Image (cartoon, rainbow, N blue to C red; front, side, top):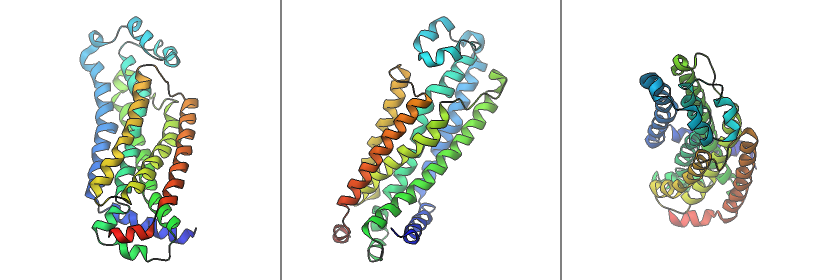
Length: 270
């Protein structure tokens, strides 16, 4: 593959992303909900309810994963929901951010070109089918991962600042978040991209491509529910394992996508 061609294709799509209102508004909404509203709610509820609203330690301990029980036992009652939800159980839900942003951008990959009537000139470029496919993937992966990391920084700031009256110290991030953000987030973003780019090369509108890829959110929901109900705990080791599995699936999806990708078929669909 030609690195210059890949860079040119990625830069072209990144310029288009800045004009995509759905991507911009979606990014703003995700940031407000997951990085600001959630930590504000869970840190302020203990202050509002006081000790009356604090959970009974003896009732809470049996309901949480064994790996977290040692941490919870050393906390004051008001600190338990803050650490439990924001420091541990909420972690998988944060993966929605890179997944959704990646899917929105990737949905523009080929369908956006069709709607803007710019696909035909692109297909006549000297880029190979593989370079076209990989270039589209990179154009979505880079902003999705960077945006996820930026939101993690915002989330960290809000959690520690808003939670200071309850925690009385800087306590976040916990160990489970680092592999989640640095390893699992890029893996799930790449999965969203691989699936969505493949779909977008087959459908005619942006919304068709985006809605078809929306089912991938079920992966995040499954991880979240599994952790809440004690079926799985995304410890650093488990997160590394989950990320490795996702990357393996990503490689398979990209291989399949490149194998069935057809420039001629795209030309006939214009």
